[in-house]
Image 1 (tube, rainbow, N blue to C red):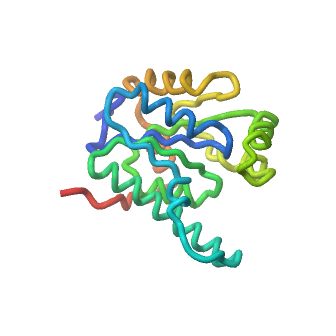
Image 2 (cartoon, helix red, strand yellow):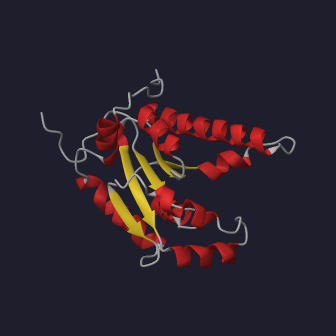
Length: 200
């Protein structure tokens, strides 16, 4: 049986914004909340990092703790969607395991994967202007974040405002084709779906 465009899997919708640091993900997420016609939760990964307290860790312990944070974040997103909540996720696939983890956790037909694009010179300009990111962070992420190459819809924040990108995404939602980007990547990778526990 052929799936209809926009057909859902029964959970909340996950609009997943993937792009480098300073690409404009957070701005698009905030603009989306103003134009989406339903209730959505904005879940940025930075909010999870901001929850952390405790002593300064040595590099090896810090790396392990950061991976636990990211894995916990993925499961929090999956749990919110499994309970029927719509979420806008602000994150990045700068390491292959993050994508694999999300492929295993999220119901693939309930994910709209959005590529947030911007040229490297513009990213570096924004990074310098912000002053709150390590120098060269966007450059280190640039080739890795979009390496998987598959999206449902893509935005160019150098050519379009956050509001225009948000409207582009909203206009896409009712006609999004199947299989989704997540369905295609799961089928190609053979990743088993573990998912989050369903709410009762």
